[in-house]
Amino acid sequence: MNRNYKAFGLALVAMLALGAFVAQAASAKPLTVEVGQETTVHLTGNQEESHKFVTSSGTVTCTSAVFNATAGTGAGGAIDELTVFPTYTGCTAFGFATAHVSMNGCTYTFTTPSSIGSGVVTWGASQLHIKCSEGRKIQITPTSFGVSVCTQFVEEQTPTSGHVIGKNVASSNPMDMTLEAAVTGLHYFGSGGLCGDSSTHTNGAYIGSSTWKCFTDTSHAKQVGCTFS
Image 1 (cartoon, rainbow, N blue to C red):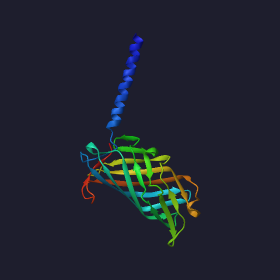
Image 2: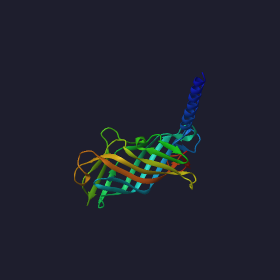
Image 3: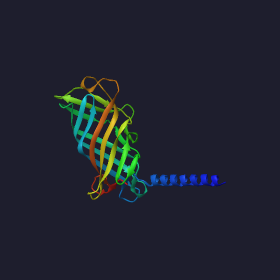
């Protein structure tokens, strides 16, 4: 009988511990916008450190990377998932060629992070997704003297490794946030020449950091704070 009570007691402790863990996970909010209600929020991100796409062929580096997103918040201003529309300009490839990066409607989607706490969140590779409509892909075209050298393509995918880390900018008011990308295991293929052959390569990497702000209007005049819990 005592053994049964002891086993029951251990099981009860385990259940209570699991319940506390689940409650903690459920209360964690990846991103909270300081609006305190359900509404639509407009987010913008601007490059802090150069954004780069690194392959066996070389590196594509952009002087400007601008990100835009619109998201509906839940109760209390929480956002659990974010779809981002990037624009890259001022790009060069392989150290000599001008490069044009066409997203062709492809986006970056961030789902619920793998780690949340103390103003820092981490999205692992499995929570990061490149989304494209059918038949579309990201296209990187280096040119020399206005003539296309070759083309690299990045299709819809979920990276196999790497992460993106989000942090609160404590000195900002309203609160800004930063995103630091170090994503690896990206798949790509080329059209030949310097861009690589048409077979799928799996060693692509994307790195870069940006500062983000949140607004309650489409003209980005009414800024509100954004915080990672």
